[in-house]
Image (cartoon, rainbow, N blue to C red; front, side, top):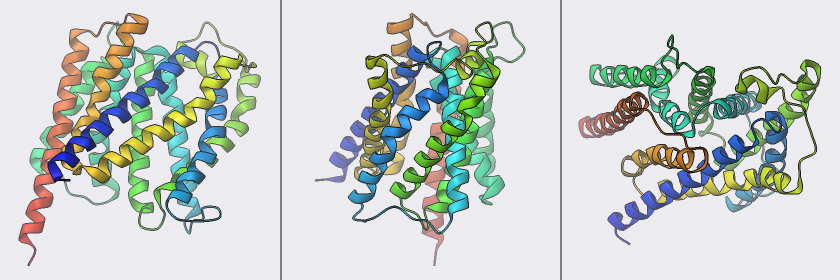
Length: 314
């Protein structure tokens, strides 16, 4: 198979992965106001954990995953847990399109954090790209205006923790496989859900609070058979999405495939319009466009600078 065909298949897999992940957003938004976040995370983790062991077997390994850096794995899992939890809090209050637009700022945060913690330099053109992207984020969030929504803050916090997770993933990839990291993350999800479960019982329901806060402190309740099936199925959705993304990058070249992760924006806008009649505003679309173009430019600059480094090597 020629590389061009592999790239096309890779693009197809990454778009399919974004579509599958969007189903999780749809389910979470449906559950907001009915069940607490931690209950959803708990049931999702019960399915996701054994799936990570299947991934581990697929890597040709046996027994249980082990790590030489347990503290980093726990911290990484904690970042992932906080990212997923705050993301769901944002989904409860914002249209899915707005959530996807804010989440698209992740490459900007990853670039900035890589410079801060990994010592990766940022050239002037990349700084300009970063500033353009963050202007786009401000247009989406609109702080200090009448249309400002607290859910945007949780969406930004989720994106920040996701970016921190990526930084730790880069460090752990030297010693731990993807399946090992997924296993420990699922363990942290499960443990954190159990440990924090009494929180909602102590605080009690807050029906008059902001939707994001109310979602966090809703009372635990026995889910209906259909809702339980969906909650457990979220672990399988995660596994299917992860498989598609991994398959995409194993087939296609990363600089060709990566830009198509932004397909999550039109997919989520479409879900929001079809299911909740959320029409994107002109300001949100303008901000999303700036953020998207900035992310694409950063991908282009990273590829170009990597090629120049290769060419200048003796």
